[in-house]
Amino acid sequence: MSQTTAKEKSGKVWQRTKHALKLRKDIN
Image (tube, helix red, strand yellow):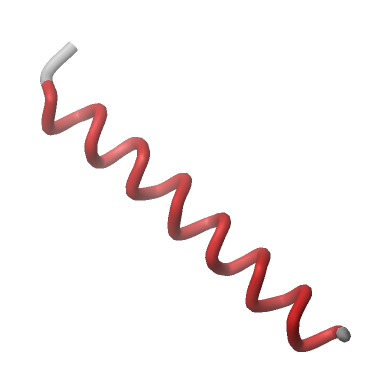
């Protein structure tokens, strides 16, 4: 597996996490 692919994968996960945190913040 190339390093770029791993970076992109973790980046996508991070984007999803940030989105989830933002939604949680808006709800609270």
